[in-house]
Image (spheres, rainbow, N blue to C red):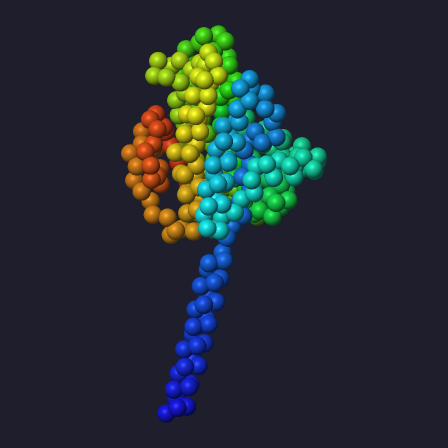
Length: 271
């Protein structure tokens, strides 16, 4: 009887060890994602010395990743910029690749693979934000548009368009892509700042757009790509979502549009 009891206890102990090891492995799974705002290597030239929108959004997404209890890790923008500045050749290649992505939606997989490898990341997230008009396809910085609109006292329904693309640099494919947009200025289409206080007001709206819409939606959609059952989708009533799944726990600002795509990136976004 004692031998039988000991054998049972040994088997239970073995099962306990196996389950403990499997649980530890499951808990240890994490992914490293390099977040690259399209303007990370551009000189800050706007009059207000505000961060570019792509950097604001990227910082918020990085914070979301690094607060995911180790599931997704991402180096901060300051560290990425500092390391690129120490490698002039890679910096130049990255700057050219980001410019192509920003202005022509062209993805240089070889360059993004190289820069990803420099940070031990097999996934790269590209973030770009520009102001577009119905009159032309010229992409401008939101702060450049604010300066021009204020100087010439123009009235126009400007929209801020944001593109977020997740790359798998091992297989050279797009894992996920998404587009967001929001109207700039007041309801009367006035987007201007006569003083710093008014300019700072627009800056706060951009930060709200990032924290309340782009960052949580992008980070949680990306989390679903790596951990398909880790997040429960929550329906949110948003203007013209284009069939997108939204994951939100707070009130969204008005006039936000979320255009979601789960198909491979082709370089054309339907805004």
